[in-house]
Image 1 (tube, rainbow, N blue to C red):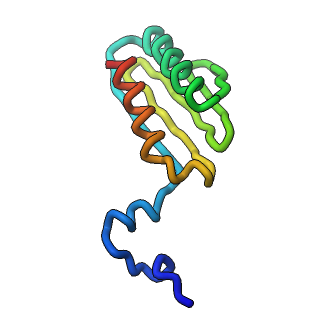
Image 2: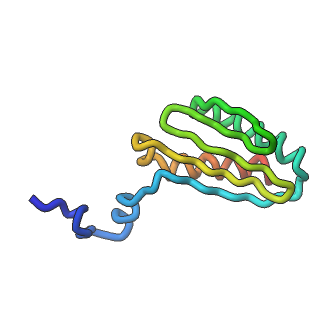
Length: 112
């Protein structure tokens, strides 16, 4: 039997987009806070998201790495931007949009 998902017979573009989740979330926010204040605020973001998604975090210079069940990544802090790079495991790929929104909301709240 032919699986319509394998041959590209999608009922609409929205479904096609959901079917092609990448499991990678990249978000960048520019700021004018200075690196020390941006780093303090990234700590707040990490605390907020860390408790929600049970993440462990570690700073290495101006890079915060995080790891949890089915998710890992890094947050790079510079004097002009905060860059988030997240890799989701297979089980969390279906929640990619929700996770992206949570990160964006936390960044907007703490960096804005």
